Length: 279
Image (cartoon, rainbow, N blue to C red; front, side, top):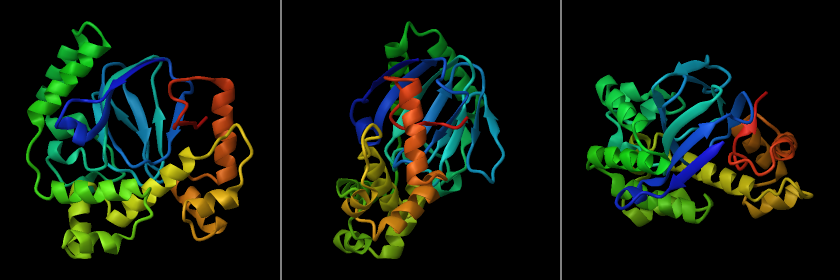
């Protein structure tokens, strides 16, 4: 697969981790995406793809693309052969200035871009992307579209600052301390987070801690699960295992088995850092 990404210019870089272009044959027909402290926008340029947002939700098809705010559980992606798209990896608070609805309404419920930006707007953007000379020009067009749609969002400064502190501590900071430092009540902070991120600060902290712990795992070597759990600030190994199953549906050992399968079957693949085979 071809994967091209870059960080957008200010002020978008305060909302977005990167813009990306993805094209080619996916490594597996179905990929499981564990939840991470980020949100996602995909503009689809190929055949429709399908997403299953949890075992209790039916698989849905997306032709124009989708928007996913901060997830709390794993998603299953079914990519066509081949696939082609451009997208945005948002910071947790990043989609808020581009959404016509509170982020909480989209929590674990992906919607089409048409539902967010309208059919005419997304059709025009897809046409312009299709005529672009290559991935870099496509990312410039996407960046221009985002700049045009960027708007002021009440409470974003508070949420962004608090989220940045949560990220800096990998989710181990006490949320009560953050609300006191910000001079607001815990209830007010939680309400702002649900509006702009889709989840509470406490839930975001759990996501950051889980992601930091998973990225600390070296699947190629031996793993001391007790030491890993303690270093990440989990109460004990049982607590760590419970969080793992809550986020991924897998035990830690099963996760490593699946990760090792990916590395063994597709060494050096552009997607091998986070998605897992769901086949």
